[in-house]
Length: 571
Image (tube, rainbow, N blue to C red; front, side, top):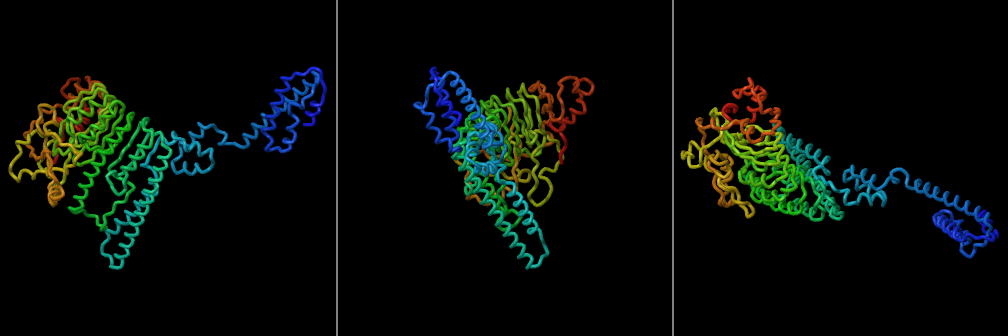
């Protein structure tokens, strides 16, 4: 500063006023940046006022110019060093880098980091950082460990015998303690989920992925309304992936109130009632969900195959590319025209995975599948389903089996309901040919609980391809007794009653086309059937002719085909 004052007092005849003004502003900026840290500079700021300038010769101006410029350059270096010293390491990273780092943290760790400083809080509270919300893996690790431990203790208690009365009392007390521990942990879990949802509502996140495992039919926990509120307060136009497990809450402990490990008719009736109530809740929730989401590409969920649910799913026809539909009821009914409606609406669907358990008896129910866009089809987890006709020109991979839903007898014996040795074959008897003898058929299944949003099912004949008769459907004796035991809790609907039909060894299974020929005609671009790489030429045959398939293909067809040549005998 003394050197600057010296230049200031020098006299000159030629003044470069513009240069002096620029130097003055540069020095003022330097002092303004550092006066808080260097208080001595404050008292020297007044010497740079405009009236303090005096004339200097050209040599003095040049020296002053050089010194002032060197001073401003050093100020930039000092300012940079101070900034690095203040924001060293992670703080010196740009916003995008911090955003990427925080995106790898789970919600709990993000909440902890948010309290560190305002800079971190600004990044963490960004709407786009919370683009993926997965409730399925949130706060569940320690909870499930405690749940498994408590259930093991409860199982030991219910199976222990020959214990003294004192030991039995202690075991019951221990059981109650474990039960209270589970209930307390679950309440803590619920409070955390609710707090997290409320936090997200404030942020209004831009969701791209959403997954949850909540029983939306549980009126006490109210999970359905909680997820609805999150969807309403979030930006969901860019939601691409959704996994909606709406039929159960894995984190919730399940222990019967009396500590028993057996079931009664009342338990079963309550279970059926909860299933129906949950289905009604799902129909309402899914209609709301599809009305908000328009660009979903991946969807996985249990499905009830009602008319309302299929109509809601068809709203995603232009965006959905991968669909996974799991079973909800066991057994479950899937009507052919609903399946046609779904596949025709999903015009961009490329991958489809179905899981259905059809009440087919010792046979299968045939379906037609038609899709111009489907490339991958997995029906290997279906039971009682087979293909009689396909129209999938772009299909490349197919996974399936020829399993049927073989129920167990609940009449006290451990044998199967169907003991006569038969092959897996289509059951083509019509309802009018049902036997009238009570010894040859079980009583008809009572209609299911009806509700306002549950549609009327069409006749069974509409669920089959043209020219085929109704399939065999049967009922469960033990389940019928429990259903009819409380008729006051059920209302008759206009749904057709499904009568059980007996089978005959003379059924026309020989008319069932081989799956290979069905695929050859309807899926010409198929490359893989289960583990076999399709050729559609002489390589698929043993001797190059169309009389005998090679061993690899024949083995796969025995697992998938229901024709007389490849179906396996059953006992």
